[in-house]
Length: 127
Image (cartoon, rainbow, N blue to C red):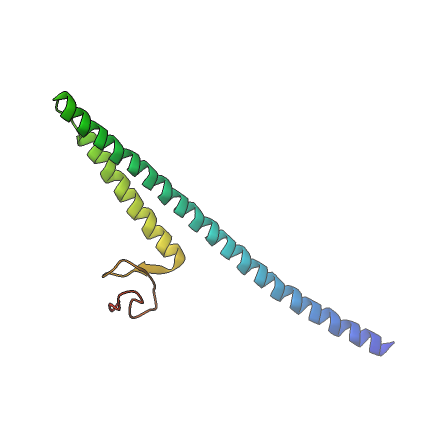
C-alpha cells in the first residue's frame, strides 16, 4: 500500500506541475489573442479612415469640376481640412499598429522592419 501512496503523490505532484505550465501557456495564448484582436481593430480603423479619405478626394474632384463647368468658385478649405485630419488619423493609427506589432518603419523606404534588425531587408538602409 505504501508504494501506491508514494506513486499517487508523485502523479499528483506531476499533475500540479503540468497544470501550472498549461495555465501559463493558456495565459500566453490569451494575451496573444488579445494582441491580435487589437491589431485587427486598428487595421480596420485604418481601412475605414482610408475609405473616408477616398470619399473626400472624390468630393474635392466633384467640387472642382462643378466650379469649372458652372464658372463659380468653390470653397474647398473645409474639405482640405477634413483631408488633413484623415491623413493625421491614419498616421496615428499606423504608429499604434506598429507598436502593437513591435515593428517600426524604415526611414528610407517605409517598409515594416522588426525593431532589432540593423538593416532594412527591403532597401538595405541602416536602421
